[in-house]
Length: 259
Length: 266
Ligand SMILES: Nc1ncnc2c1ncn2[C@@H]1O[C@H](COP(=O)(O)OP(=O)(O)O)[C@@H](O)[C@H]1O
Ligand SMILES: [Mg+2]
Image (tube, rainbow over all chains, first blue to last red; front, top):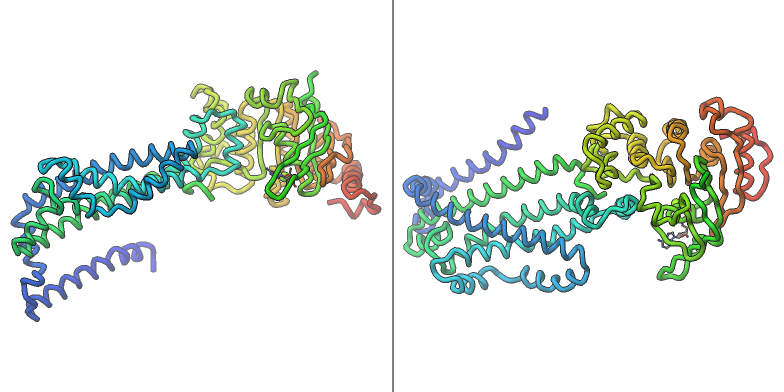
């Protein structure tokens, strides 16, 4: 295959699978008569998407905003704390158990607590949850990245009598950059999922998650699915943006440093 | 005239988990201004350690190391030497030009001056056309040239090189030797050059220092008698005087004279 047909095939294959899947789904519902109650057909969901497009867009905006706020805060915190941990072993030792505990806290356990802590009309609980979820992968990957410098490069910087800060700027940080980006890519999906799931457990109305749960609770299944579809699109969109960002930066860091 | 390096009674013992390693025992060596001195010897005889002591990357257990009459530490801080290792050690995210500029950047040299100096250095090592390339786009020999240009960036009067051509193929290696000879002649810098190759040591050096292991020490010093003004070219490699010195160094290394020098040429 020539490169262009290969690329076309790579795009066409998943599209084909998706279209086929939707067709089979539609057939199952309309021809075999699977109860609409159990499984709404794609066309119904599509219709709901159209009818509620304004509300869906607002909800996606809220959830996306919370996820983004959480991601930014969690990622900045992750990078800064990882830089401190990479700089001082004792700080790393202090932080490691905390990070390990944060990593295993389930969102479902924390969401009700934080949501009621910040009050029923505040988005901060949700943002805090997204931030916590984003923090862990950014911290872990950044710390690993900061340890990627080779003895040879460190010797070289020391022959230049470079200060700690100069070495960090010229060597440690650029070697870590690809790892930071990987952390952010993982964190993006987690932030979106967490912001969404947190909406199931209190806090203000609004946001995709809370509409999914209220639609489902009132048996408006097609509408619930429409919100689910929007949530998938939001997650995919966020993921694509970070993949592109990663590509862009890695293009400037050709070999992704360490061998 | 001031000596570039003065090493006196230096010992270096590494303490490792499995015990002590006597890397160097009572080593003394002086490298004159502008002199080219090679260190040769089997693996583990302390060549790299000796060079790293001069570079202030290691501290001697006993004895003193002076560089241009200062402590090794002061000389490092003052950027009195440039250094190159067996691996080029380029930063892969920087272009050739930015790699050469790294020491200048760290020492706060202004942008305009930096640019003209980098152009000059790239020209010197024959890489002007590759200034915007990244290291992974270069061959091993080209990468090593970038490393040499980087080592020369601060116009050091002393160059420390640890098997800089060790990873190169024979053809590239001989070409690089001639270029290094030309560059050091142009800059007038003293060189401490670690190598495994006898012909390489003889071809480049004023003096060849032969070392032996366990503990690392200097067993003999051979003056090549090939002056700084002698062209380092193919003719030199073919000359009887060159063969003779190669044989002499080989004999010193193996501790016994070798009979048939004509067959031992390369
Ligand atoms: N940092 C170190 N820690 C422990 N032992 C070392 C260290 N560096 C070198 N050595 C030991 O010192 C000896 C000399 O090493 P080196 O100077 O690298 O030799 P060469 O460069 O001649 O091959 C070897 O036995 C080596 O294992
Ligand atoms: Mg060595």
